[in-house]
Length: 287
Image 1: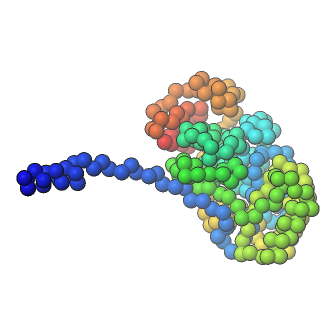
Image 2: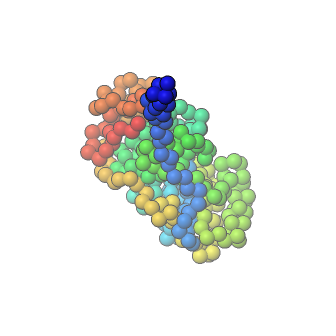
Image 3: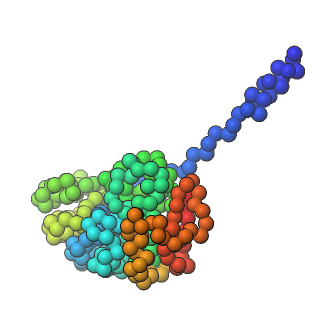
């Protein structure tokens, strides 16, 4: 009797207990700068024509900004005008980062859909600038653990903000300026500011005013990576030449079945396609 009881207990403890599923790592989420006396002015939803005015104002003040680009929000990132804007921002020393492809609410998407939103804009930045971004800003600031898991697998961190100019929710230029007045008067150690380069009054009224106020208060205008003391990119390679036949497939999800075959199957049921043949990891697969 005792022998059979021992066997029963042993089976319960060792033979019949399956291992718990392993949790995937979560990407770091940053909502504040960490380097004292810095301000990171960040701009979402572009590339847009007002990017040029913002860049000139920042550079004239000895500063740099960060642009979180969409792939297809205010026009496709592969349009010639938008390619020029993205390259201009990068070449001027601003940080370029991911705001996903279509500005979807990532917290409402499936695992495959989240990756699809991420990888297509990453490939665009690889193709246009030769870089793999280290930071992603989720549209609307909306994310969950699934989004963080996907970002971690892709080697990216999430960037939110601790100051919102309010330009995207209908505030007037005067109201946005008042918000900057308030934060400058409060004088925190650092500021991570949300703005949008898709709004003309932001570029031509609010940002020049904010730059003047922030500089007068003694802040340094830096990129997001600089205000965190981190690298802006996972790697830097060589930009590539635009190929219209490839870009038609990449920018239109309905044509993904026409993409080149995968080099190897992607795990977790996620499909990735090879569109580029550079030697700088552009066809790296992520689960």
